[in-house]
Length: 210
Image 1 (tube, helix red, strand yellow):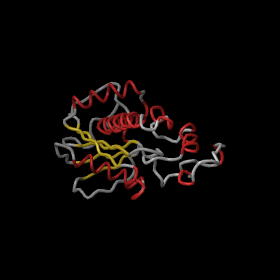
Image 2 (image 1 turned 120 degrees about the vertical axis):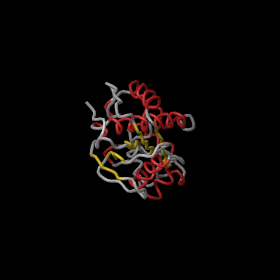
Image 3 (image 1 turned 180 degrees about the vertical axis):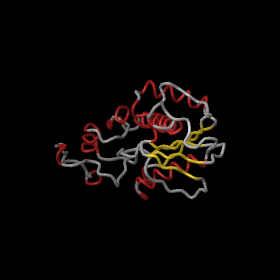
Image 4 (image 1 turned 30 degrees about the vertical axis):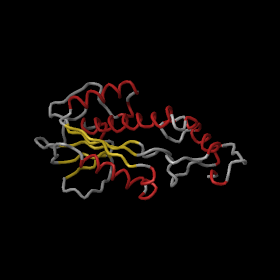
């Protein structure tokens, strides 16, 4: 069972991100402050849940949280500052948007950088330990998935409605065939390595070659 708090009597915001390993789209982060007595039997790390349960839990968290917020950093910014710093930036954006100010932050992962004065604790695999981080992981994941499904209609050949921008073989084959677009992270290795055995289209214009 997930733990309700790290430090008893302290207002804690759980913080997590989604989309660090993607080839396309923004990185999203969420910050969530839950009531001290919050409990839901299905709540867990978003990666351990199916899409249906994530969508149900998103509604629960949005309805029952004391407050929550989502931060976004787009692909050009990711390329500018690198994905780790962009993830921290998205987290800090989410924290800054909270309508209630926390006394402490529970950060999923082993490091964090911030200019805020909030105390924070970095917790490896914290989304499977603390309810507030799990709730943040749900919001970050569902908001990002929703966004990727929306922009899928602009570039349907990348299959973002299915892969959400992650480096699946179908996604990389589509990049090889059609080139990249403005949503792709150009600082990432878009085509992967030779083990993928992609068939490159030698007729692609030079501006599309990767």
